[in-house]
Amino acid sequence: MLGPKKAGTVSGATTLVSSDTTVVGDLHFAGNLDIEGLVQGNVIAKPGKDALVRIVGEGRIEGEIRAPLVVVNGKVKGDVHCTERLELAEHARVEGNVFYVLLEMAVGAEVNGNLTHVDPPAKSARNRKGAAKAQSAAAEAAPEPSS
Image (cartoon, rainbow, N blue to C red; front, side):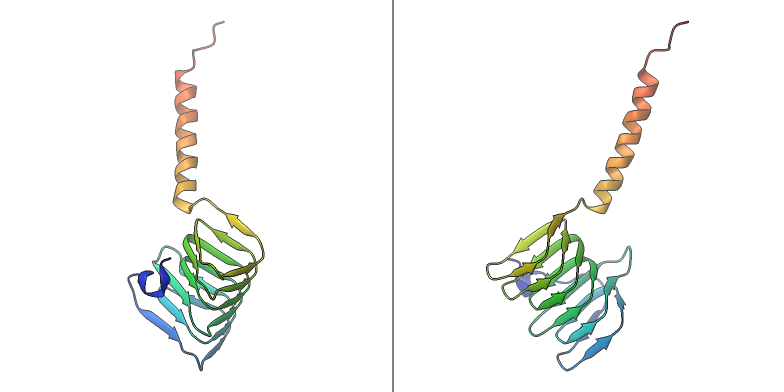
């Protein structure tokens, strides 16, 4: 289990929603986002940026999460879309569907919704490019039709 300390950080600033704080509305961020309070809205990582969301202690999100790296050890009421690695720690409680590339789930974590594995975005793009190249090469290698 990665745990809150082993999960580390990503480059960029760290934003803290402390235990006595409530954020109402969508939260767009890059870098590290530590949630110990309540976010009533979607949490969305800026595209193309390193981003890590950590929900710890009494932290709660009532809305959707979209980020490459997510560690849940609090409560989420909404869908979780994780494009790299998702850790559901011992006290994680998720009411919603979870979409993940890599998943680590501790004993005691709860998910009340569907778990759906998805391909990483870069891998999907590589597969499409590879398929297009293979198709192009096959067309070039095909013998010319005779008349």
